[in-house]
Amino acid sequence: MNKELELIFGGLLKDLDFVKALFEHMSHFSNSGIIITDKDAVIIEVNPAFSRLMGYSRDEIIGETPRKLLWSGHQDASFFKEMWDDIIDIGTWTGRIWDRSKSGKIFPVMMAIKKIELNENNKVYYAGLYNEILQIGEQEEPRNIKFYDENL
View (tube, rainbow, N blue to C red):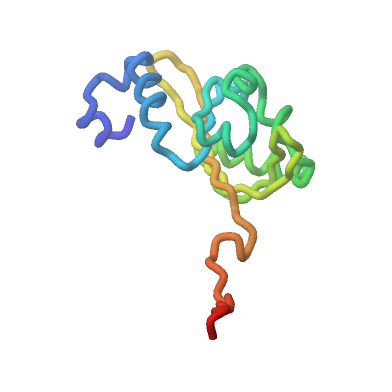
């Protein structure tokens, strides 16, 4: 466990109820989508930003797998093998991935996945952070706007 977090929260982070309450309250402040899965990639928690980004309510997505609901078809099996090899071997992966929302819209996201191992009970979880990649021009203010004054 991270020593800084241990100093800040003491033994509270070992209390699963506390961790769940912390996630529930803190994740509402994030504009990034957050997803947590168990060792089998079954979704056990998402935050409101994830629901907004992907179009699924929390109740619709809990118990499902990202592959079943979000797979866009843009990446092949070798991409996912490399991604999961990194997650399992290194404990983390960051990169761009194409996902599919509930409405069928396919769009790129920057994603970071972290493997979380709880030594106390030998459980493994995965936490993912999603940020939609805006198309070029969507994130910038228009620069060449002409203003017309009818009084001139």
